[in-house]
Length: 342
Image 1 (spheres, rainbow, N blue to C red):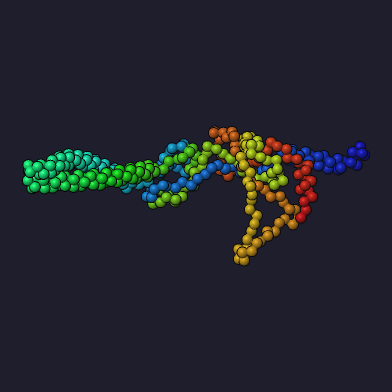
Image 2 (image 1 turned 90 degrees about the vertical axis):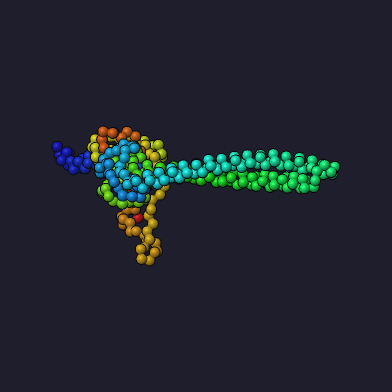
């Protein structure tokens, strides 16, 4: 009895130390951090076309499927421009048909003049022979030569006209292609007057109302892509040597106590900023560290959640705990950090 009383405080202290060591070892046998949070791919929602909003088709914090219309922009100016381009395209096609018909006519004229050239060349050649034999007068020969020259000039003019019409046709074809491209682009703008969701996700931070005028690049609200969820876990630099892409992870969320998720490391941030610059002098500034310990730097590790539950809604920025399924070398870490005095 005296023995128990004598060593009871020491025994209790030893039991407390063993419990603490067991608890510490349990949480450090593998890399573990509570410095983590949930995130997903996000993007700002902006209109592609300038104009005022006519309708808002979703509500703030609403889940929408891919392709769901979000809001509409006043569309008549874009539709009328597309209609104008259609009529312009029809006009150019009609001009091209007329130009091609004139070119065919010019080619037929060339054939006619070519036949006249052959005829008058024959008559002129025959007239020279007959003139030498005194069978025809000199005026007859001169008339046939003049007719030949007129036919040659007419054939040359018809050839130049056909060549010019060919260039006009080529120019009109190019204009038609340009107008077709402009019409396709305008039709794209027309479709973009209705902004749709590019993926499944949530509409957040929406504070707009119909009637507001916006232009491309104006951020109207945010969209959280819920097709994939991630956790950013900030691990100590002394634990990075064992972490590689593909490392499996166990994840617990404060939002859903007791539920365990599984994940896989996607990437490890290559660096983190520690440099500071004095705002007034521009020289380097050294931040005052803890005077007792030189704390290890933390690096973000991106982990993709492999089994998100569709029945449970994950919230962007929610706190998380992460344990990686690799050895943490707890004793090495403990003594390494214990003797790192600065």
